[in-house]
Image (tube, rainbow, N blue to C red):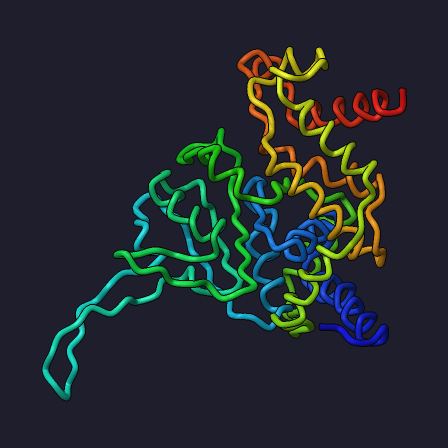
Amino acid sequence: MINTEAALQALLGKLPLLKNEIGKQIVGQDEVLEEIIIALLAGGHCLLEGVPGLAKTLMVRTLARAVDLPFRRIQFTPDLMPTDIIGTEILEEDVSTGKRFFKFNKGPLFANIVLADEINRTPPKTQSALLEAMQEFEITYAGQTHKLERPFFILATQNPIEQAGTYPLPEAQLDRFLLYIKIGYPSASEETAILGNTTGTRQAAISPVISGAEILQLQSMVREVTISAGLIEYVTALIRDTRPATTGNAYVKEWVGWGAGPRAGQALILTAKARALLKGRYAVTYEDIQVMAYPVLRHRMLLNFKAEAEQITTDMVAAELLASVKRNLSA
């Protein structure tokens, strides 16, 4: 528990330090970094998508170096098996008695921060091995349940699915990611800075600025951030309007095949609270909901074939929903 206002402010002061430390290595991408930190504060997981060469892996590695927690990287490949990531039992012998016994040998998933690199390079069987860990923060193997140490944060990267040699993530797995973050190309000035910073001999020194215990305290604080009844009503209306069967929005009926479930509303409120805390506020604003709606809804609406043919994106649908729901509630 945080007993004094000074202790509270000292803890909140760690957040800009964390962002600044990552910024020593990563040029630009401020919005992406902010969303990753928001997911960490909200206790969820991130899916990062972008073409090769946009420093997705470096970004996660740098975050891990700035947080004083165990980190593991899993390179997903087509031949990776579920036991390669969750672990397996091995036969050992007690040297004093000569008796043999099975011992569970923990896999790389037993770390606080896990980078699932190029997750869509491996078949769905192995992708699905992450489901229980992401949702329940535990792993079951051979009838035994093994708890994962908190905080537990998975950051998965993927290349766009239209590239060769990739497997689209199942919808059930996508829904377990709190945020779906898209990484774009840097600006001309940022790219110039990247080239200058990464082709010389100097390397940025990244130091841990926040501990696991402090992250758990911040995650607890996120849930204490207040949100008005009116904003909860707004989130409810927004999520329900993503569903073609119940919405009155013609745009959604035309382009969306399947809408978001209640988990999307939970994710939107939690990430809005985390964003408010990151901005130094103790109450959610309308802007928090507007900003977080895109990475929350991006992977939770399934567009129909007509939308794909017309190059309609979930971000376009989200923008229409944000505008229409606000108009309807104001009417």
